[in-house]
Amino acid sequence: MANLAYKRVIIKLSGEALSGDAGRGIDNGVVSNIVSQIKKIKELGVEVGITVGGGNFWRGRQGAEMDRVTADYMGMMATVINALALRDAFERQGVPAMVMSSINVSKIAEPFETKRANKLLRDGTVLIFACGTGNPFFTTDTGAALKAIELEADVLLLAKNVDGIYSADPKTDKNAIKYADISYMDFIRQDLKAMDITAVSMCKENNMKVLAFALFEDNALLRVINGEKIGTLIK
Image (cartoon, rainbow, N blue to C red; front, side, top):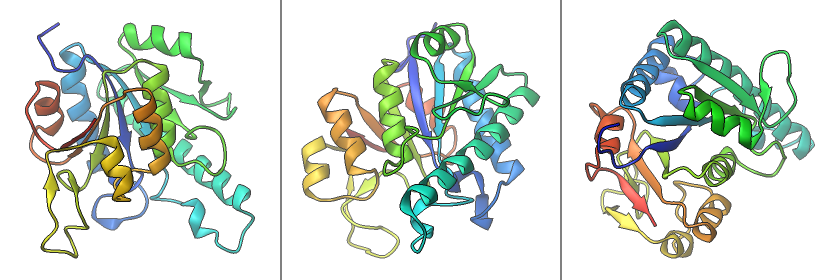
């Protein structure tokens, strides 16, 4: 294996990232691009797990008039759709991939189990984690943090549409300042929105580094894996 900055990573991939400019559904070209990037780092020997969101189909908060538990489970089912699309795209590019779910959907995904997941990662299978933590009231950010900690990843990679974490939304505030790095506590104190606070707290308690970066910059994942200083590191 090359001298890489990270050798086992969990990537948090939002559902919206799969939808391209449409903002809804799945853009096959975008998915193919994402898979190609991940394939490149896997070929270097990096072990890759992906926690995928479901916001391109459904977010629990959309069900404001629904029972919250029902709305959140609907969001989890949306992550299964995205996970299956990713698995198919990996297989079409010749990359072994498997979906593991925190909720039992045994006909289409394996249940998540730590020892089994560790073996598959070591054997070179890309793991795609669906259904977050498997519980309502938690985001897929928290599911990603949990998987990164449980599988002893070197870093949790927060793949974003912006190039890091800012003091405010850079799309609406021209004075927003980009952080090269930020402590867990400063992130929490400033109530920043780039990642769920529960997930950040969990990473703090377990010393799990989080790197937020723009997924669609040229060779972004390769640059991250090779140790280039891009994005924002939460530590």
